[in-house]
Amino acid sequence: MALLEVSDLRKYFVVEKGIVRKNRNYVKAVDGVSFTLDKNQTLGIVGESGCGKTTLGKTVLRLLEPDSGVITLNVNGRSINVLDADEEEMRLVRKKMQMVFQDPQSSLNPRMPVKSIIGEPLKILKIAEDPEEREGIVLNLLTDVGLGKEHMERYPHEFSSGQRQRIGIARALAVGPDLIILDEPTSSVDVSVQAQVLNLLKRLQETWNMAYLFISHDLGVVYHMSDRIAVMYLGKIVEVADADRIFDNPLHPYTRALLSALPFPDPEFRGKKKRILLEGTVPDPINPPPGCRFHTRCFERKANRPCKREEPGMREVEKKHLVACHNY
Ligand code: SF4
Image (cartoon, rainbow, N blue to C red; front, top):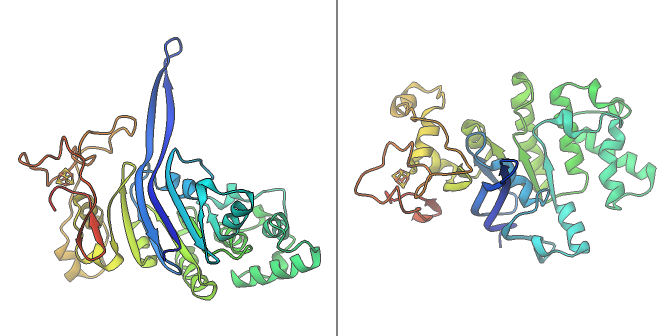
């Protein structure tokens, strides 16, 4: 049984235009997304900025309320319907699913010392109510993420971006999660320490036996981190497969374009991947194109296919490799 099952999830945002006569439009940020994530595995979600991946992460955790869909978390021998959870179930969900945000600067309270930032969830979720016990746990967590006792009393502004992200990770770990949603965890970290943060995340995953939902615009980073990869375009998943299959046999034209833009160090491999330049820009998510949402930029579109009128459904083209494209 998968740890997390997400089915047909939707999250729309209302946009009102005009002062007198208000026209209601919707940004379909997440529009019918389904996936599963197994225990101790990493599912990478990749796509351009604005494709809905951050909204997806927040909606799974119910930091944003979805409009429809089903989210099931299977923990401690229980299947919890996250969207219909009672207070006690929601407390368990909050313990078992955590999020590390893109910008550690704004996600850490600047007026709190590190020991309170990391200790707060332990207190709120009644994991360690005794202050001394809490401090002991916080110190262990800091050590786990490569910080130490000397950092306990310091405030977020006294740290580098990489250290702040380590604090964010320690705070997520504090409650003993089974799943962490990592939203672009290295995008606001100095380039020189990005690899350190990624390696730390890998090491922690092994020692803490956690699953990751790893969200990033960078397919190279996602490949390095993930067992499976889901490619998102304009609120929808267009391809999902094991990370190696996405690299060895990308099927969706959008995936192929993303992959062709990667700088491969190996010249032999690079030679096989001719750069595909997509025409145009990502369409307005308020008014996405009918049929296949990618058809306005697709270099594989053919007149004899229903790309402009029919939305392609997800099909399993090879084992555990699904794609939404009329070519298959
Ligand atoms: Fe391109 Fe048509 Fe496939 Fe869409 S369905 S990706 S337009 S070939």
